[in-house]
Amino acid sequence: MYFFCDSSFEKRKTATGVIRGLLYQLVKQYPALLKYVLPQYHERGADLFTSFDALWTIFMNAVADTATGQKYCIIDALDECDQESQNTLLRQFQESFDPKSSSGHTLSIRMLITSRPYPEIREYLGGFAKKDLASFPEAVLDIRKFIESKMADLQQRKSYTDKVKEKAAQLLETKAEGTFLWVGMACKELDPVASKDAVKILEDLPRGLLQLYGDLLNKAFKLEGKRQTIERILNVVAVSLRPLTILELAEACQLHQGQEEKERVQFTIEEVESCRMLVVVQDTTVVLLHQSVKDFLFEYDIKQLEAHANLAYRCIEYLSTQFHLEEDDLASDRFLSYSTDFWPEHAKRADYVFHVKDAQAEFFSLDSKYLEAW
Image (cartoon, rainbow, N blue to C red; front, top):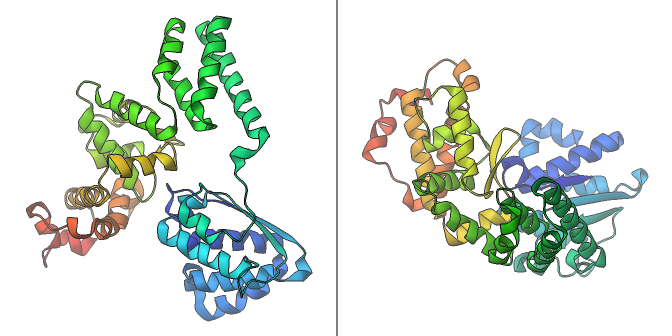
């Protein structure tokens, strides 16, 4: 069994989503384990699958079933779950699996959890065997091979001399601090420059991911006339409750209004590209490059409550101007669907920052046709 947590997807960053995904795989591999699910399902119906406590109890009963043999489970990037879900899962792991815990007991399951080493995660998992992946000698060799591959590609495309290639590779290995992501982003910075400037570009890049993010953000802000658009894109993508399509992002940020759809998509992609790899297009949706980008933005640039409030306002504005009563509209207009589903949650997460302004007064009036339709 495995589960890849991902902060960009609502269903992949919650404790309930994690345990539901694992339980589904467990039952699919061992159909006999349905005997632990069905009684609860017959009693509670579909509500069962939204209750973490109920699903966890079923999961623990299922993994304790020795008739189905030893089981193995991987949970990747636990740190990408929301904070409440992290705490919920960590408490359960500690209580259920920690041999030092009074309730810890032997089960026919082995679990591997990967995460960045945040203090609160270390605290809960302190009783378990742990290993820093960067401490493996193979990790150094792997990143060296990655750099060699990137350099071979750049040498072929940009006609690097052996001397430039060697010096660039040395700088990449020295500054990456064992981080593949840093190498990938640094090599992206080399794409548009001539071979004679490659070494200077790398020399000017800061060490470490957060410093690199800051450098890239500053460069993006210096693009003429782009700062406001880049800030809007970063704010929306950082707090969106599911990945937005390119057209949804265009609506959320009010980009290139009045353009035909084909042009609007292309122009919006170009705006995303101006964000210097902090935001990327992935499978037709726009997402932050990595969870660490979100951490960086929330710490140094973005005010979360304000960002949620602004997106809530935009959703309400869109509902007020675009909402039709035909059900088919929700399927054909994705941002209409997003606004319908998520404006209340954005308003909730904005806390005291969100308040009804004059622009939203009609939506919230007692006889509002928009509120009634919503």
